[in-house]
Image (cartoon, rainbow, N blue to C red):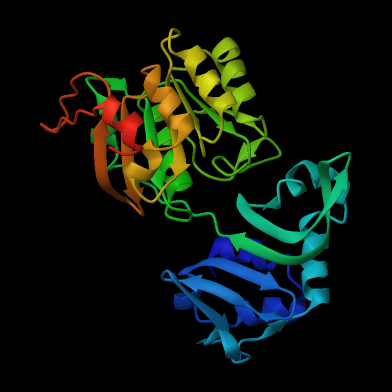
Length: 323
């Protein structure tokens, strides 16, 4: 059985676990997501299409799949949190839990509020397993775009959810570390290195890992204490992270990060990315999808990369929100 699937189904009640245990190996190897929602069929993502699973352990239409009951969700949730919700509350208030192996489990339910702030979740009615993958060498197509004359360019990788951003960041960090770069991974959501008891679930080479640190704080601490050449982190999202990147500009530290975006136009229209471009912090933005580099734009200076040089008119960007 696929090791990743085995790491996930161990949390499920026996009734659901047996369904996956008896599925064909060829199907299991292509499952990328599993959704368990109260009074809905089991839903799996296979080859970018949603299916359900029948009692005969076959893929089927959503309307014909095995139904998930409230007790199935409750059992799985209790197993994921080791029946200690308090210990996982920092993750839970952000609507996720990280399972063994670095698999992120999204949560749906009701917010618990106190003084206008979310302090927890209750009435959990849905669990969304995103299966973490390791593809050694998946960053090979990326490297000629971001490594120029022995230097790592400040890079933002754009891709829709579930299209390999975290996986390629992990592989790139591993590869750079084995090339002799000092690489620090800021792993706020425990997905890049997927550490357990201080050890990474995946091959991350010789990288230093700040596990569970908020990205902005992790970046600042890494620069001060780990002397990195490159900092790698996932999902650039807010101005605090942009400000932390700004502090690295005069320290000789490069960064590689990712952001949810369907295209470079969409990426470049975001305020946090504009802010970084404005302070000349970004060298290159890359549109990436499951091992393929679709589009590249260089934003600073002349980069001799296979003869491909792109210039961006920032005035046009700021006026129209596009490139």
